[in-house]
Length: 143
Image 1 (cartoon, rainbow, N blue to C red):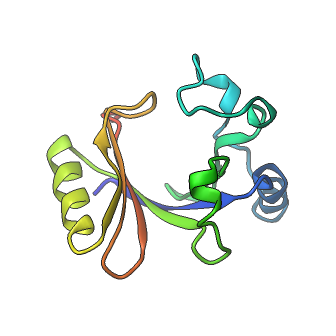
Image 2 (cartoon, helix red, strand yellow):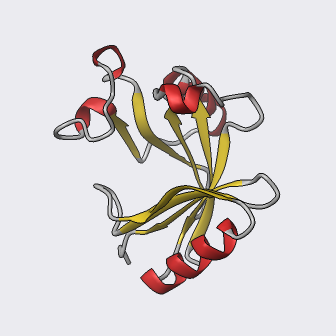
């Protein structure tokens, strides 16, 4: 496995939260992507949410990155509860590893998003394991 990082979800307060975390940990954001930055709006963000944070990263030292997003979908915000608003984001070393890990973690749990190509990864999928832990599995093919 290449790396594992915490991925936090917020209901519209990601930017404020990450500015707070940056004031504590220091450093610069690795990237700040807003929903409006995706050509064609593939995630179906409503007009009033286009400036919300789709992805942000803050290095925490070494290869560790604290990542986050504003949850804008009614499908997800209905289930949003402080305490279940995080994922463990895994970056696999290969397509095969991504498929194996995603499949094994989903066994006895639930696949929220099957592994598939996205704008940011060759493969990306989301699942909840049998113990209720939420996982994001990526293979970006970036060295």
